[in-house]
Length: 492
Image (cartoon, rainbow, N blue to C red; front, side, top):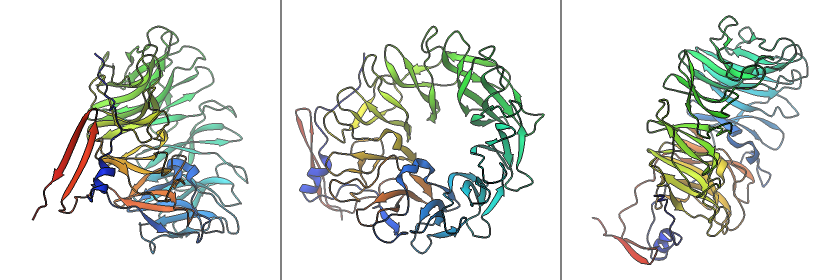
């Protein structure tokens, strides 16, 4: 029997508690780290999503403008510790992006110094330690690099050159150590390596050699050790995408030309289908893989229940649908819209009634529950691309239709789900377009606009909500036709 639960009334605990003079449970209050670009201009863009920055030790490196140009900055969460790292393109913007943590003390990124074009840079957080690694596409052109995975002190990535096209490269952070690994699709044609994952001391990825389509490859970082390991869809048809490493195996969306794109795995020797979720030639297109409490969760489609969350223990035939948030053939869960909180799966989902809201499941089939209807009615309250679990909390962007889009947090329960702050008071939004929550040094950083300083860097303490001081509190909760009184005696 389908048992997903949807409250018949909005949860009003927090509002009534405040009305009765109670102090609700709250995490630490978000704070403006620094007004980098003084005034209303703003220094950081909310359009760069999780590419907003990357951790470097206990600090965050990110892209910001002090009103002159967009350059590389670093912050330890204090105003004094937030500073320009290097002006890589004096008088203009170097626009650093695609940050990738490397080793214990460096971050790789892409930037334009006006001489080499947008190329590979590295930083250790100091001006002297921020350098152009290599002009991969010589001259003012750009290599349009995308980072892949780190293996044994090197990062494998893809880059584009006029001679070889988009191919597999590696770097150890030095000019001499940044080289083409292999021209998989010989000549200027592209192999377009992507979907990198690490298992068994190797990097796995998807690439197209020009004759077998996009298939699964492996590399140890050398030309001799880089080889195609599958041709699931014989000939030029593509057979692999969306790789993920778990328990020293590679799980991926595989297409053998007969059963559509379905869940496969590679154990280092053999590639095998785990499950044909959408039987026949149709595709379930499994993706958004995430490990939660000993299971591999993912989003997949099949015609009778639409796109929902599934899970597997990794064994053949073990895939099981977890949710059917939107009963019937309608899609309930979005790709990239869930994560794990203390063994629970927290997700942005829609049931066909309330719009896109925050739901939770413990992994038991068809027991998903609406946590909180942020925006009552058919409107959507939760921005699905914004959810990120850090520690035992899910951070996300939500809009209740009254106070605008603001940062919210959830521990997977209704009382533990709330707006961190109304940073931009009233109806205006403080955050938008999936701002990207990044953890560094015990803080969660994100860009926000308080209506006065423009888009600037903000932070909040990471971790579970702080204990409430010993105060006499009471609250009311309306669930269905039952009125519940919650009270706590004054202690001490």
